[in-house]
Length: 443
Image (cartoon, rainbow, N blue to C red; front, side, top):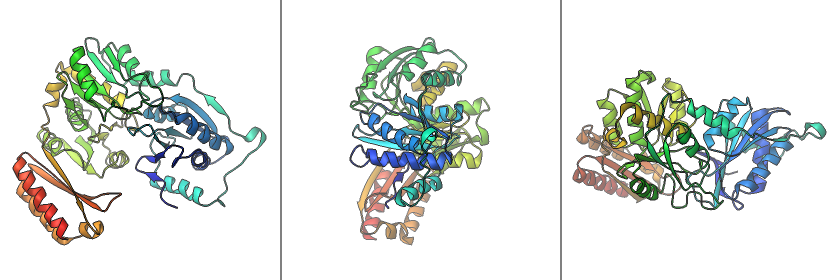
């Protein structure tokens, strides 16, 4: 059986690749792996996609058929499911969402009882159960069948949690917030307003098919124009399931996840709230972040791409803060998963307490120019293991002398090797990429 789980759950085109039949089976297997016995409980939430009703019904049926109750929280941000899994003392949580993907896609991801995403081993066990029909899952009858229980105050619980993560008012700030016509559409404007901000919500009228369509963290142009037109101090852009944040300053200039991490890390360090004096990022973070952190005396730990690997490194080292350039940012002292609304509140708290504009704070990091070339190769694994490529990469990094970097990595799905360079000197950057791509083509 092909691997079902990717870096963020099971994804596919809804009703084609991710079918109700598959959702039912995932519900049964997931309920067994997480609850282990009849009588357990799983929190289930989703985003606003039209396919969410269908997949939730199928998944919930699978969970209940295994004798496990569903605590249905409806349309709600992904991090709220992680929070409610812990708060309701459930055996696990399930989110039906494809995050920033277009409406035709959907996904299913699981959380353990602590609110963290499942380990590779747990995901592998679920896959094995789907592949082997002889693996028995309980099929109780009568009173043993699971029930579906709506949690009517899910939004209220999540809003209360969010408001407790900062201890100051947002009065005086005018904030535009792009809800991506997704799971944040009720909660994000409400939290900001209840904390005193003057809120300009946009893309907050989901109809089932307009999620992420020309809006959200991957399409911030409309938000940039809204900020300028409304005279807002800044703008906030979420993705479909609201686990990411990208910001816009008062001029309409983009502030990405790397810059948000620099702003928040420096603030946390000043408050003495940056354990291990370390921030964990992925290999995709801009070299400008590393330079800014070095200048601030903050250590940077690096992982491969994927927020789950950031979490693993945070737990391993005892650090609590890190994330991705895409805006998937983790404050482990508050939440076990990335939370776009939580990140927005922490960013606004820095702006408010320092009485500085987002533009001023973002200037603490210079984003270095970046160039990426995709090189078609016959055997990407042979290329990546080449001693000649390793020597050339080491020599280039020596020439850059800490003022730039190179990253060479294979595509996960195609026969490509990606050659990327970042450098303050754009001419040097182009020369480096040309040199390395020519070498890769010849290997």
